[in-house]
Length: 137
Figure 1 (cartoon, rainbow, N blue to C red):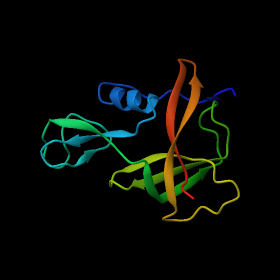
Figure 2 (cartoon, rainbow, N blue to C red):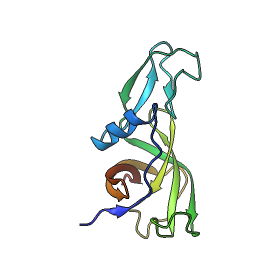
Figure 3 (cartoon, rainbow, N blue to C red):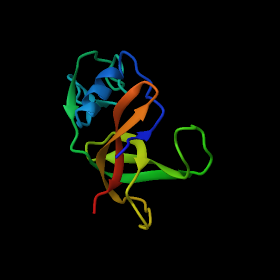
Figure 4 (cartoon, one colour):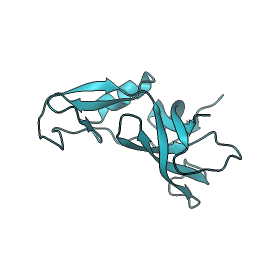
């Protein structure tokens, strides 16, 4: 199966580790050592207590659908329309955004249980992996 073509993610000092974990099919976020708050997006200091120390903690990969939109206009030539972009509240609390895939004819509803899935994709820079969301049931 040929990987889908997707735009490459923006990478940088605080994003690189996130994408390295995704490449290993692990969903991990920075967690503050002092107050325990998750940092998303990743950054240099905790948004709650401003502490700099953190660890990368694994999330269980489950959550609920908070919001979504169906894109019918093509913003990226690599990404065919229509596609669903979803905001998911993870079981650990942080809200992550990704595509909702694998729902078939199922109605998309608020608070629908979802789980993370990792998808191999390609870009002009080469193959990489992304995390998507799919119905948990």
